[in-house]
Image (cartoon, rainbow, N blue to C red; front, side, top):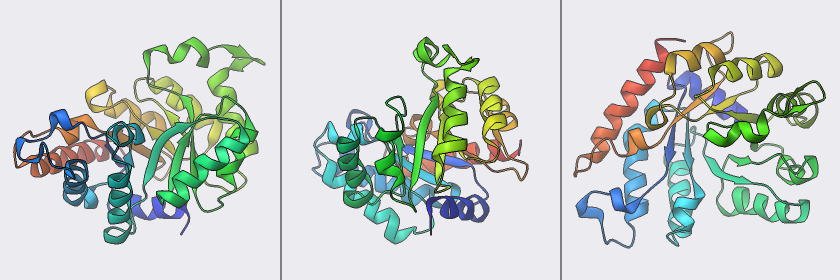
Length: 270
């Protein structure tokens, strides 16, 4: 199945627009995991096992693994998801952006080494820096558009050719770069008006929406601004609010309850 086919199936099967971000910080792990060589894998695996029936996708953030020299645990985690929950897409959150020859290596890393179903990428070096990802016809490429960061407006709100830069990115990806039909865009939940604008420019293209939970994005405003006519179209990400809902040995159960509450809150507005 392609990334979009898997995503559509997960939206329906799990009745969920929730994406759980896997950003493991060992300083926040329960005491019984601290000091273990495989702590990152065990922590994330437990979260995945506790929430897999509540999500439309998982999104491991590569820096949280690489900074701890835990790339092997990231490989093992994605392999576990693919084998145990084959219908749940995995988005490698890497936000890569480099010249074409280097991007080819990043694409190999994401899709062949880690086996991710999709990868986040930075479009601001132009199409040639994105084409190596697009060459994997069944894989998703999720491009930064209107980010949830406070400084996003420094560049993304610049006027270019009669529109804001983020609008230009949205239109370009939807109209010219999406030949495989596997592209999506990142639009932050902290900017519901911009979510609505991107939805207007891109029709039913999926949107990855970070910024609810710990970052304070409003769920109702996000869903109302970004859902498609059939009530899907969104991957609404929550990371810390779910991962660290509990700090004791029952952390996975606490994460499940937080994920269930978040999924149900999203569904109230679909």
